Picture (cartoon, rainbow, N blue to C red):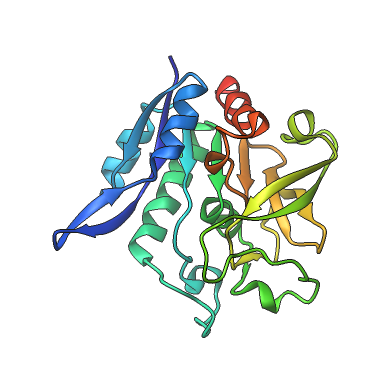
Length: 230
């Protein structure tokens, strides 16, 4: 059985720091037939040692990246940032690339992949001149749903076809595309909803397939295809 590591975030519980992760990531990957380990936020040597035992890495969603990683000042639009998480996930990606194992980035994870390869982000979707669709809910928890247009012969093509409906929870998006990456999915207003590396086994999805895998079989198939390629 293949072993997949998932990044997590640090939160607070009873005034103590805890590593935490939404269980839906674990459920979707478990259904896809792999073993799972949550990777704690530890030092570089430990990260390197952990990745050496993995068959794949998932970079999960979460708070905004610190804009300093793409050489910008933090604007009023940026919400919570945790620079220690940024550094930790950059190292996870670094050592996954060195081993050439598959990486799947979801939402924040997709954005982090883009930044790692020298790309940048819109610090808020309102700064993207083409943006006309609501991509992030305001004041309620229900998912915003919209269409995405999918590139032929991409990771998503044989699962979702030319057009699909996905959820949307992000207020930031990819601006400048990172080196070696290609866009594999766009929303109707031009915002990047999926990326793929041209040479490495790296895929980033701006939407959250793990939130809908029970209701939409195609979302579960995304995880199953990724696991099969480990």
